[in-house]
Image 1 (cartoon, rainbow, N blue to C red):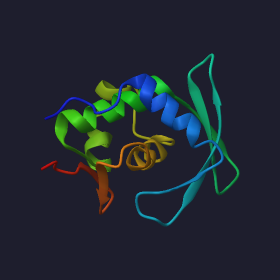
Image 2: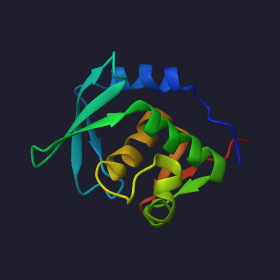
Image 3: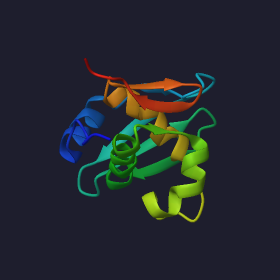
Image 4: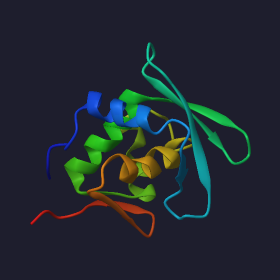
Amino acid sequence: MTTPRYTEQEIWDKLNELIGCEINSLTDRKTHLLVSADQADRTYLIQYESGNTKRIKLDQLYALYAELHLRGELSYQYMGQHVKQILGWSQWHAPGSAMMAILPVLDERIVSKGGTLFIRPQF
């Protein structure tokens, strides 16, 4: 559909600005905290309300971001069916939903409706 608005480096820079911020889930029922970013590994750490943590690779987040721009929308169902080709995972699992939830925070043109992400049309 469209090329990504931001480069991988720009997404990384935006992520670093969000360290210490809480991110709402796409359903607004839960939050997770963006704890830290590892500059050498290009990963960031999130903490769920439960206290559990997950480290997320920037290249995987950017692959999700690029797929959203390619398709124009992303849903949990679509990711469940295509996660191997997009992220190389055997199945859709944590931290996938947290990765989707941060995209509208990183790019204000991305909106969530009913747990599905869309790119807001530009006029």
